[in-house]
Image (cartoon, rainbow, N blue to C red):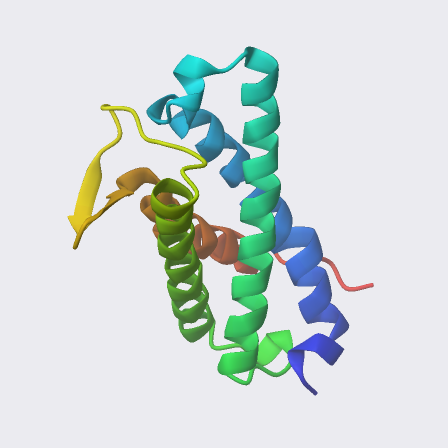
Length: 155
């Protein structure tokens, strides 16, 4: 049985992984908001909207990365998952998307900018914020680990 046909896998994702990821992402977005110029230039209502918007986006990215990872590793029922492979692939996919999004939104669209306080690294002519990348290196594996560690009761 493929993972998407396994009720236990779907429940684990929906009831364990996504809530952990959402909570961690909300905390992370609140914590690193001052590293963007939005914090200095916008009203509090817009900042709150942006944090919520980014958190929802993080959850969608996390769900997409996990789903793609499960497909790429050809995961079967949740009881047989290779957790390390799944976490590694999902993390790399989330990180790749974040690199693309940071480039698109800072360089191409100029939708956001970093403050001087944002730790950055440069690749070619593009600066990337360190905190968005750390977010995807840390939060999805942690959410998966907690989802696995605290399984749901059988129905």
